[in-house]
Length: 506
Image 1 (spheres, rainbow, N blue to C red):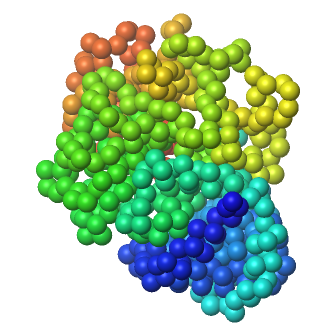
Image 2: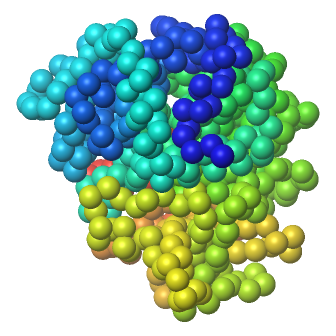
Image 3: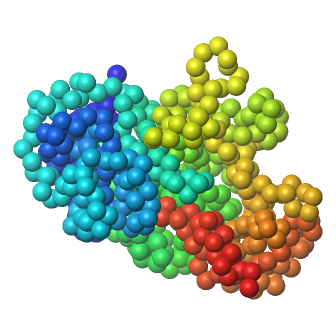
């Protein structure tokens, strides 16, 4: 039975040592190079007798950073990925939570550490990547590692402004990768085009299946997502056949008529998630890639990555949404109503996740952990922890889950309960719009719609007036040249709220 994610690397390096594992525009690493540098880094860290500690990897997005992750794991510790593009104030908050004894960095990020006056051990990746490997020590560490030991900590946004560190163990990641690989039909000839930053759990979809199957992952340059034609040309140049992107990234490509200039030649699997993929944008991708598999994925960081999947196997009308489907093997979805009873038929409930993929909670934050990781209310006989996602869903006639919205996207306006996502869905249907997002001004009780496209605001207003009841109509409709996105490529709602607070009321 596999108990350590590094077993993937140990097996694959014997089969394809000289095959490219990870690459970007600056460097590429073969499996043997990843293996050797990871073992060197692991030996170096082990020489300081650190065990089961958070080791920060503070580097630019690169194959070297991935190698450093595995090096931390070899040392019997857990890695905490931080990117050079992450705001310094956020980095400082993360360091305050972790109090890390060691940081692995590159030349660029070392300067940031100096500015922070970090007092722990600072290690330059280039200085330790060829450290003398201590095979006996590494083997001893591996024998002492359990599958419930932490593997990584990734930080999500906190409602109080303080990031929350989600702790995942070997067992949950192995469970996730085994199931995801089966759903996506990963093989040794899979070539991934990675979009997600390395400090999000979303990158797990490429990092570990690459190790498991001896596949290849290209880290797509972030700048290309602002130039869709060049982005597709990049996919073609590297013969990328599998992508797992947020829906906003896919919509960006199709929404700006990219396929009139260039089309993806090699894509056979297109997985998407984190947001609703508008049907009109999906139809554009399906038109261009009629033989590709399209798979909707759903899941929170707190359940390791993705928990549900739906392979799109039929046509949807423009006003429908693609289901998030059914849970992975060894995962159970409890759809709980406010009274903690199961939703029946088409009733709406909160998605609660049960299974091995549920993570260990939030690092050094027992209060928030107790709020979200709770005892299964349907079972009082023994410890049975579920994760409450805060996401609302219902079942359709095929018993597939349909995502409705976040609990906190529900508002009470003019005496009516409104889902902001329903307004957004209607805007998605309007030809000539690409992205849109609704926010709510609680103080002034106003619904604000931001959108990107070639439609004028009066046209959007007129369209919605014919589609929605009066109480759901946005009070303000604001056109943007570009929709703000989070580092992971999702629409940045918090930024829009800040933008409206600063400028929108003028």
